[in-house]
Length: 508
Image 1 (spheres, rainbow, N blue to C red):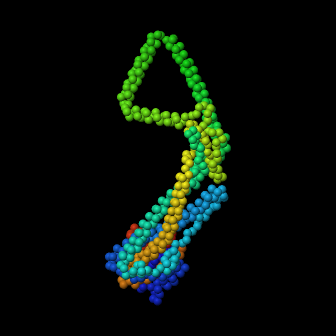
Image 2 (tube, rainbow, N blue to C red):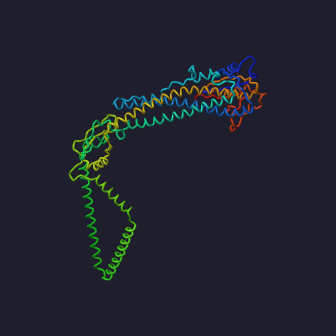
Image 3 (cartoon, helix red, strand yellow):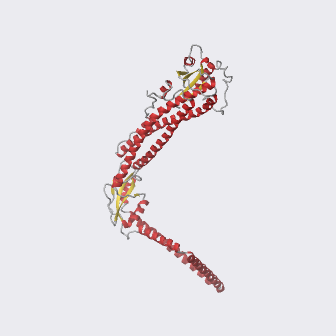
């Protein structure tokens, strides 16, 4: 939705008509024309007007951008909240095992209450069509630059406040969303406290493991969790037997090769044999000398630091051995029939079991579970921590809702103020351009044109034909086209019209 703010000198209007009535007759079927009350404002010097013309172009862009940014934030915040609420309902339905409703898609199409402007709560279109200058807020006898700078200052403050509030809300929403996603995730990531109602078995010799098992392998887990260690021991024994057989085969082949070499050596002359023995002895002596030299160098380089590193390495190895220490052969870590189902929701991809094991073989049993793709979740039973986490989540949700309500109200109020200021800045800019174009005393008439869809080019041609000849005497270059690279000094973009024209775009 867009408008054109145009002004023409009174002398260019047909006798007995106003610019509005004349345009209504000339553009019938192509546009809707409304009156635009452009008051006489305080004019400065020509140099001041020329400088202000360039500045108000930039100010217009900035203030309009702030108004649209507030508008966009308002509608995006409203839609995001509607979608989040719909998704929360879907998650609650899933948790309760109820059928899901396609509410997220419907929420995306839900429209927020339209922003209103002014005390009479008009829509943007209604406000523009019925706009009137506000002498209380913007005294018309104030210098034009003072009015323009006052409007720009208000817009700048609103822009900074918007950034600050959006950043604060975004930070709280990010924290809350992270907790929501974690709680709404699978058993691989969500907290397990909600599924453990009492302290699991924990003694000096026993501990309880929390295992997340794919639903499709639930029966496989129940059939094998007690046999993981015997199965692993059988597999190790099989591998050990295989390695032993391979070692025996290698030893037999080496023995056969050695006998063949001895037979060949016995058939050769004793001198050659003696030479080979001498060479072997020499090589052995050289190897022994190098080994002794290396050992001495290592002893020289080793110091207190190396000794500490060696001690740390040994301690680490001992710790690893202690963790992975297996129980004696034939003794299993897992307690038979100790698997307890803690969570089994129909729509969940995983189920949760607890299993009691001996501490001495717990690490080995964990490794066996990981090999079978049964995920071992670390867990500490702490009702106080769970309650604190729940309270934190509820506090974040309450703060998020409070900030959202404040931001929605702020956008509604501030959009009205900034949009009103923007319309006044448009009027100031139209006035400045009219004075620079038509001169003093100011005697121009303004109108607000709402082009029909697809009628813009045809409408421009009609306006050009209507005013080009009437205003030709005051400007000989009325029908020319400006270079697109030239600065925009009249709000016309790359085109120059025989009348002052500014664009007012409410929505794309």
